[in-house]
Image 1 (cartoon, rainbow, N blue to C red):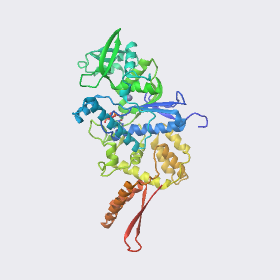
Image 2 (cartoon, rainbow, N blue to C red):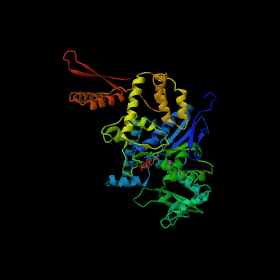
Image 3 (cartoon, rainbow, N blue to C red):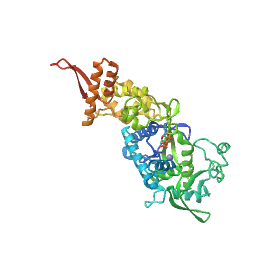
Image 4 (cartoon, helix red, strand yellow):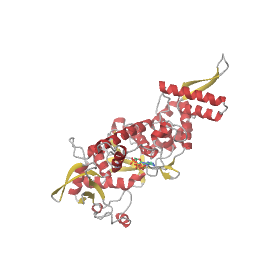
Length: 477
Ligand SMILES: Nc1ncnc2c1ncn2[C@@H]1O[C@H](COP(=O)(O)OP(=O)(O)OP(=O)(O)O)[C@@H](O)[C@H]1O
Ligand SMILES: [Zn+2]
């Protein structure tokens, strides 16, 4: 950074090309990422945006300074899927209590999951329900944004709903490159008879007595229309991003599936409510985690939860450490699809083991400039990791290796064992000794390699008194 300009280029979905990243304010670089809808455990697919944008957050902090980046990732805690889950799981509770139970446990589990994957906490994690009605602190809220949209002629009321009028925005569809006419062709007109245009979407919908709702009233053509209701999904992000990052900010991220309709509609709402040319300057989208060529998703039922992967033997007959999953994700460029497999995790685990034995307990020094440049080229973690591992033993110092890995959020130093871990370790060593006695060398080696990847090095020897095989261990710190 000799000329003072950060070397970062990002593929911008809005422009369909890689562009030099120039922040609006280098003293406060602002990024918003759509977070989880908290009704169920997060799966490996949901882990991908958390990891990818955590790497970008770390890189931005590296380039602009830790205190000069604001990263907001919301928690969607109002959604019809949440209501359904609350009714199913807690039929005895009043609906609001049941909903709170579902959202609080799911959100807490999500925090635990992403922390285990080495993700930093975002600067702020707003919850949608706190941004529905006008706030005492004057931060942006959904009801006021909807009212502004009505006032500016971009929204209308029909059958107890407030809808966004897509025809009122000249360049609606610019992000997904779907012209309105195309969208109209396949629309189910009969179902949406109350809409002016088939592409119009809900900003606010009325709630029945047994649905969660907020008392709001909207002024339409000089008339107050009270609607006890709930927000549409898209308006949540328009409000929370404006609340923390302002009307126009730098980066907006999420998975590829969010480009349309979610991000398209966020843009429509925010730009039309605020009268701005853009909502965010750079739109980034991660590719899918796939299983046999299909997107991992709850509705497909082809998912493994993060908790299952880390804590049970559901995937590949064993539990996997968080940094192995993280590395496995970063071995593919964020815009490419990842086919998720046991082999991929094993490959990552081998690399973790090699990195551990190389780094030992060396403290971190400087991030090598070639590594930084490669990451700065549209977050090319795959190429950067290739380069890094090819340099091991070829001149790069262990401290530089460690600094580079830390920039990706990969901690390759071994942890100290607590009592619980020590007990588990003893059991695995005993299990391995039994396998050796049974001449099952393959399985015995697998346990040794697994432990190595976790930072525990086994040493085989003989008890000098009895001549019996014994195993000692040390932690690579
Ligand atoms: N298979 C996947 N690969 C990569 N990203 C994904 C995948 N599935 C969901 N995401 C992303 O995870 C984030 C969290 O989204 P959300 O909680 O709404 O998940 P979801 O859409 O309910 O998941 P699902 O698609 O399984 O229903 C979004 O950015 C979404 O794009
Ligand atoms: Zn969003």
